[in-house]
Amino acid sequence: MTTEVNAHAPSIPDTTDGFHLVIDALKLNGLNTIYGLPGIPITDLTRMAQAAGMRVISFRHEQNAGNAAAIAGYLTQKPGVCLTVSAPGFLNGLSALTNATTNCFPMILISGSSEREIVDLQQGDYEEMDQLAIAKPLCKAAFRVLNAEDIGVGVARAIRAAVSGRPGGVYLDLPAKLFAQTMEMAAAKKSLIKVVDPAPRQLPAHDAITRAIDLLKSAKRPLILLGKGAAYARADEAIRALIENTGIPYLPMSMAKGILPDTHAQSAAAARSFVLPEADVVVLIGARLNWLLSHGKGKTWGRTNVNDHKAWGSQKYVQIDISPTEMDSNVAIDAPVVGDIGSCVSALLMSVGSNWTKPAAEWLDAIDARRHKNLAKMAEALAKDPSPMNFHSALNVVRDIIKANPEAMLVNEGANTLDFTRSIVDMYQPRKRLDVGTWGIMGIGMGFAVAAAVETGHNVIAVEGDSAFGFSGMEVETICRYNLPVCVVVMNNNGVYRGTDVNPTGGADVAPTVFVKGARYEMLMEAFGGVGVKASTPAELRAAMNEAIRSRKPTLINAIIDETAGTESGRITSLNPATSKILAAEQLAAK
Ligand code: ADP
Ligand code: TZD
Ligand code: MG
Image (cartoon, rainbow, N blue to C red):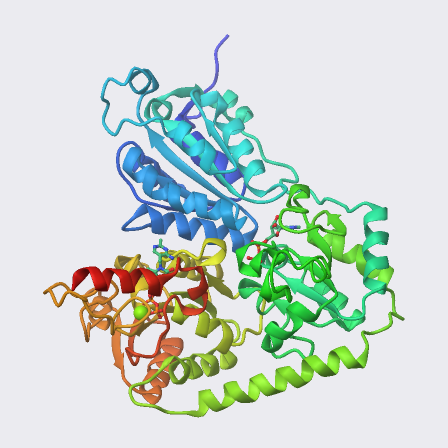
C-alpha cells in the first residue's frame, strides 16, 4: 500500500520535545506570559516561548521576575509564571515564591535544574542543588517532572495547587534532560491537560450562614473588615451590596482599599483606632487576624493587657475565608463561614434581604464624628507647604493625581513612604493598590510595577521609599526596555526612615540607616532612555507626574523630602525590640 504525499502541504513535524511540551501546556491553560531570566538550561525555552507567541518579560534579577509573577497572579486569578535557571537563579526566585504563598497569591516558579543522578550523589554538577527539597517547605506545593509524557500532568497539578482553595506559590522542577526528550506528536498532544474549573467555588454550609446572621443581628456596634482576599476574589458587587444593604461601617486593609471607593460614606478608615476597640461584632472578609490586626488582641482591640479577663473576648467575630484552618488562629471565631468569598457574601446577602435593621445611630454618629475630626486634621496637614517638602505635601500631589486617574495602578513600599501613602492617598477602584503585603517586605516595587503595566495596560505609579527602591532599582532598565507606562516616585529622605542618624563613635562610616545625601535617582532612568526629573516642590512633582501620565513614558521622579520628616519604622516602631535601651547601652559602651 502506498501513501500519497502532497508535496505542497506544510510539513508537520511528527515529533516534539520537552521544550515545546512545556510551552504548549502553559498556553493550553491560558498562561501566555512568562516573567523570567534566561540561562542554562532554560535559555532556549525563553526563545521558543517567544517564538510561539508568548510574552516573555526578561528581568535583571529573578526576585523581581518572581514578584512580577506573584502580583500578576493576584491581578488575574491565574497563576503568574516565573522562569529561572538552577541553584542561584532558583534561590533568587524562591524568596518571591515564598512571599506569594504568604500573601495567598497564585504563582508557579519553574526552574531548570541539574541532573538528578549527579545531584543525588553530590558529584558537583554545574549549579548543583536539590531544589525540590529546598522549595517544598517554603511553598504550597512542589513537583518535579522527569519524563516528557508527564509534562501535561505536572503543569496541570501546578495550576490546580496554585489557584484552588487558598491560593499560593507552587514550585515546578524541570531537570535539563527533560527539555531534550522527544515524543511522538500525537501522543504528546494527548498527554497535555486543559484544566477544567481550576478554582472550584466552595459554597458555605447553610447553618454557618444562619449562625453568622444571628450573631450579626445581635450586634449593637458591628464592623466589616475587608482584606486583600476580598479584593482577589472579585466579588466587588456582592461586597458593596452587603455593606450598603446592612448599613454596617467597614474598614479596608491596605490592599482592599478601593473595593469600595475610600470616599464612601460608610468607610471607617479615618476612625480606625476608634472602631476596632469599640466594635462588638466584627465580620472579617478575606482578612487574617495576623500582626497587621494586632492578632485580635491588645490595645488595638481595647484590651489593656492579656490578663484583663473582663475585656478579653468582648468582641465576637464572623470570619469568611476559604481556608477552614484559618479559624481560631489568633482568637476564637464565633461564626466561621468557610467558602469562597463570592459564594459566602452572596449567601449572607440573601439572608440580609431588603429590610435589615441598620446599626444604631449612636454607633454611626460616633464614627462620623471621629472621622470628620481626623479628616479635618489630615486636610490641615495636607494644606501646608513646607520647604523642603515633607511626606504630606508630596503625597497630597499623588492623592490628587490618583483622584484624577482612578484607573492608574499604585505600587507602594517603604516605611514612612508606605504608611503615609496608605493613609493619605484614596483609592477609588478595586485591585489598584499593590504593596508590601503580609510580610511587609521591601523589594516588591519594580517587579510589581512591571507586571501591573503588562497585565493591565494602565499607567502605573510606584511610590517608593529611597531604601525600598534600591532593592529592585535596576529594573528601571526593564521598564525602559519594554517601554512601560511606569512613573516611579522616589521619596528621597536620604535613608532608611530618616537621613539624620549619626555614627555614635564619630568614626568615618556613616550611620547604618543613612545613604549618600542628595543622590540623583532620576539619572538612573535617564541612563536607559527614560525621563528623569528632580522635584523639590509640590508644583514640580505635580507637573512631572501629570506629564508622565500623559506621555506614558518610563519616568523616575526624585522627590526631595525633608530628611528629618520620617519616624523610626514608620508606624510599626512598637515592633522594634526596645530600640532606645539598646542604643543607649551601645553609646555608653562606645564612650
Ligand atoms: P490582608 O493582609 O488584606 O488582611 P490577608 O492576606 O491576611 O489579607 O488575608 C487574605 C485571606 O483571604 C486569606 O486567609 C485567604 O485564605 C483568603 N482568601 C483568598 N482568596 C479567597 C477566596 N476566593 N475566597 C475566600 N477566601 C479567600
Ligand atoms: N529587608 C527586607 C527584604 N524587608 C524589610 N522590610 C527590611 C529589610 C527592613 N525595612 C523595613 O521594614 S522598611 C525599610 C527597611 C530596610 C526601608 C525604609 O526606608 P525607605 O522609607 O527609605 O524605604 P522611608 O520613607 O524613609 O521610611
Ligand atoms: Mg527613606
